[in-house]
Image 1: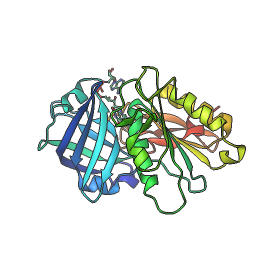
Image 2: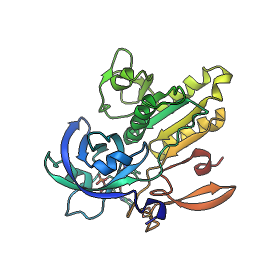
Image 3: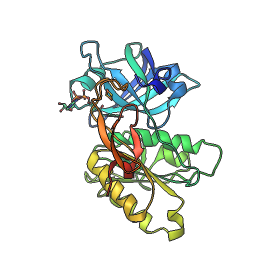
Image 4: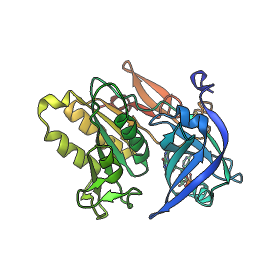
Length: 282
Ligand SMILES: Cc1cc2nc3c(=O)[nH]c(=O)nc-3n(C[C@H](O)[C@H](O)[C@H](O)COP(=O)(O)OP(=O)(O)OC[C@H]3O[C@@H](n4cnc5c(N)ncnc54)[C@H](O)[C@@H]3O)c2cc1C
Ligand code: FES
């Protein structure tokens, strides 16, 4: 295991506190995992054994965490048999949870205008980051969210304003995109929404922005194109296939530019958040 993680990844038989199903095979499950809740950061994830019969764990980003109440929540979309098995976990059941894992987002106080761009199951770490920034002391953070999905958003939406109610309550502007004609969402790609908004800002604002993004690889590449176009620094949360998720198997490595040299980095413990320009070099 990566030395820097040896004492910070907790393994726990976590009690399921609640699980809610949303349209499109999406679920939000809350685990009682106090150590994990205490040290979770936006962009970190948990590695979940969905059922004892399937030893291979599934990595899931942390959506929300309460250190005070000792729980973490994840949002997942069923793709195959692992997460399908997790859907039957009910309050009182226990699930083996390893976490929090990985280097999360590192908000840059010199650039308080934080553009949060999330697609599909890449939205959870950005929701977490939005909440962290909304409650952070220090600089006056000005987060703004752009979220895209082809499935109904598993969050309450103000259809008239096309915004997320939870972010409205935190004073964070949001815009939604979908090609599926979802109520409240603008038709198109989330990257187009973000690009249009950035292009409409006075040039002096660009120096105050950082882009934080998570989603499918084509979306992240499109995000990096926008970041390059407007010369905005970006932090991208990658979702590679993983085996051990604790740095031991090299099953998740990606090439990353470090000081101009290409190095292989493990997404699980060196990431999952990387500097965008180092992952998708021009
Ligand atoms: C850091 C991180 C965070 C993530 N966060 C979330 C999240 O918050 N919510 C969410 O819904 N998803 C998230 N994912 C993605 C999720 O972990 C995968 O989609 C997961 O594999 C789905 O599990 P499943 O049992 O439903 O499907 P699986 O049984 O895993 O199958 C999914 C598909 O992927 C293929 N596959 C699986 N493993 C491999 C492999 N090692 N090599 C090649 N192909 C493979 C399968 O053949 C199948 O087609 C995250 C992934 C990472 C790495
Ligand atoms: S999954 Fe084993 S090193 Fe990352």
